[in-house]
Image 1 (cartoon, rainbow, N blue to C red):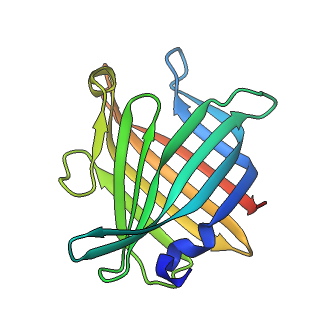
Image 2: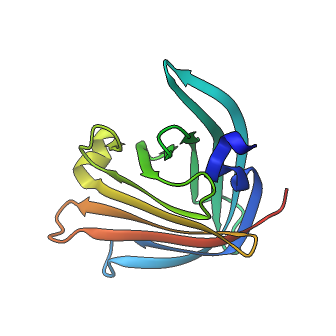
Length: 182
């Protein structure tokens, strides 16, 4: 699986219950902290050729549940892509609220950590929202920091939101530590 570069360690199923979601809530307190468990799956997609560009990737899915609950409160589907010639990673995903992100960053083929970013309006690594979210809770920036540490997948992500009626942006964060289970 050397063609997957730094994505190769992701292949498989990962689970973790050390998650913490810090999200905006409508009400007297601006945010709420939610401990959660998560399951991610990554399956190789094979070669994707775009003219001279050669991408190898992973089909990606995740679900997250509040601790003690059976129904997920968050889901994502998408792809992780590796362009070896450009030493460039991409993560494109959609959440069922009607938001899409194409984040990217550079990394060595054997990288054990990397950072991906997207920004609203960027023609390459950008963010799109449905009409309601664009007006009420527009995502302006997205950053993911991921590392492999002692056989675990550890990540931290930040989604910056411009909220209707709020003078300051809100920094929605998620983090978790997952173990490979399959």
